[in-house]
Length: 323
Length: 308
Image (cartoon, rainbow over all chains, first blue to last red; front, side, top):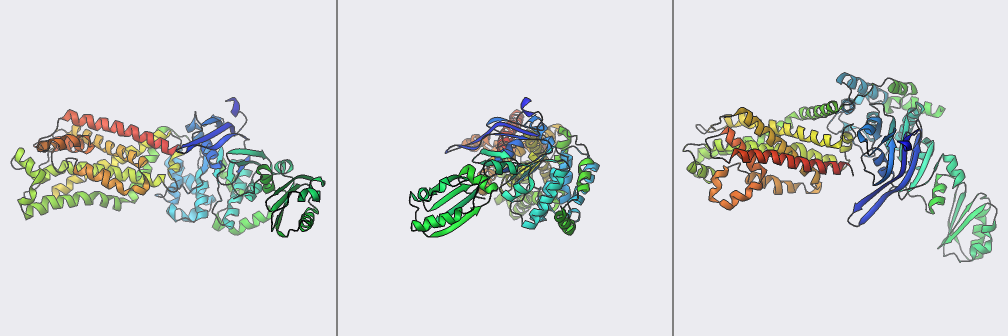
């Protein structure tokens, strides 16, 4: 239990490798996380980064193949039932019970957690009221809109007052209005002290909601910290990319003296583009255009990314973020 | 925060963004959960019966149509249009056993066994395949605070109860639907044994249903009928007693791998004792052993599917 003390969620070298006919497929390659009580923590990464597998292991539905993890101080492998008592999970899919009505989905979940019939129906009514679903109580859960279903999933995850609330890609596939609504709900929950772990592949979602973020890719945590720490650390740089109509000559960037400019950390030239990572972006774009025309190249396309989670990702992986 | 609260005021009614005080209440006034294994198990069973009650009409129709049509054709139509159609198993049974046994008498235990299999699979396999495919709604129940094996046992229990009730529906149907003089001679010789056989057979089909539901490829569900349901029923001593197969010795031996044989024969032994039947020890061993084997395998594959 030593690894767990003081954390709502803790992982040590947590791993998951799936066996398949074509060999082992590592989904999570040894991650160390620590989430404090009351914290709003985000796992950010592109699809396939290992976020859902990680949340699966923390919620006991995926068995780790290495390392350890604790939720609410309990080992997820040794005491899955204890962990399940203390967590609420909003799954990525709509896992509402299709055979039940909206109210029954909450009532039966409450009863699964040991509430009496009367307590369960009172709790369901309270949740429906708060989440604006009271007028849909008798509808079948299959008849809900995407946003309503997501609210019901969140309500259902809260019936037993969980220590930790897990949300796996809660706003994927929702329209922008509904997404902002859900953000508000999550902010209110967090303000009331709810510990939340959220996965998302939307950078702006992680930035808008989470106090701390772990950036994941290919099953590894590349960096973690507050949004500002991440920007100050890996990606406080503006990333300027210029694409030309033709291949860039090998000596073009050296001749332009780009690497020697103040603030420039790295200059990449590959194929038809040049990318500059710099803390002082003024004038760099102009120089790239000038250097290009000196080498007989026409600019096809130019982008300048201000320091953001996107530049953090680009800096950490060398690849553009794919959502 | 002003924009948030303004937006909230606008959409609170329709979109359900809770206010801070509401959420504070939600957390502070939450009842303390006290899950225990029996409570959670009971709640899951209550959920099954709520769903059954909601779908009462379709469940009832599903359960009644098969025995009703079988009995109508075999115990009403065939006797009416003449004995020539009563050859085959019934004829053999008639020749080898007692003189005046109606086909309905042979059919009662067979139909009950057939219903058990049908209901056990309908009640467990089909919902399970749905729960594992597409949205994986199984995760709803898998997150309940009990071990996954308890969830598997709960599914067997619920399916077993449905199979049990489905088999009982056969009684009123065979007693009511038949041509004059073609009614079955049903007489329960040993009630505790009858209930035990029926219960064991129900759990066996539900366990088999769990196993099938966890190993079946949802895209190949049609195969279930061709590979499991049809052979099990046609070669399951539903329409003929096992003893009558002594004319086809190889078949008599081959079908011993079919659990339906023991269900039909066990029920035949306690319901229609006038007919020849296989020894009771073999029936009980197969029913209890089969339930244990299918239950074990089904629970194991179920747990593996849920925890990936």
